Amino acid sequence: MIVLYEMEAANSNAGFIDELKRFFSVDLLVWDDWSDDGLEALADRTKDQFVLFRVRRPHAARFLEDRGVRLINRAEVNRIANDKWKSFQLFQLLGLPAIPTYRSAPEYPCIAKTADGHGGAEVWLLESEKDLPAIDVPLLYQPVLPHLADVRAYVIGTEIVGAVKRSAQDNFKANYSLGAAVERFELTAAQRRDVGKIAKALHSDYLGVDFLLLEDGRHLFNELEDPVGARSFYKTHDENIAQLLAQHVTKLEKEYPFREQDLN
Image (tube, helix red, strand yellow):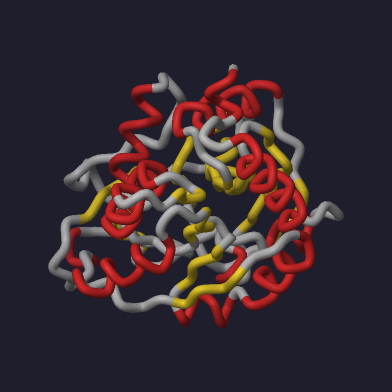
């Protein structure tokens, strides 16, 4: 199997790539040419193969799938998870509790973010209209909600393999890469049910599902992550997520073209 990264991400995820190689046969392919010619060359390189698609490139994912490349995750997962507005629409379609999200500021203070940002980048706390960032892209807006922490659930196939509670220190962004404190978190039955609905609806293979944990115990879904990073998982769990992912991919390869969700 091929694991596909862009150069910068491959360098920062070298440890995870090495872990994958411990558990099954995988070839690293680093790719940064997303031009039309580059995509044609990439399709030729990966045709009829399984590709662990670790880039945020929905157009490229669809291009490859249309040419017979078998992606993990599917192109549709990459498209929805890398667009916060589409993720919010999915939450609504499934009837799940989600942070209210708008295309214009409902009131101040509020949170503004780009639709395709990740890792805590391109997110701003706005006290007034004067705080709007000087960028030429549409923004999404969410109310500032009192909450205890941010939770990320890790899902491989239909199995929730763990969850991490992330608490911001001196920042409203609860991202581990930005210094948030992390600890293992046990999902409630309601949270497990709702996270499972998302994974099954998307037919995802390896997904991060983020929600806010409110002071009264309720949860509100916020974002999806594909590709999802595992640093906070390794920090808080004894299980090796690379091994769990390798087991899932091996099963996919044996059962292709069927997926576990197709058999339920």
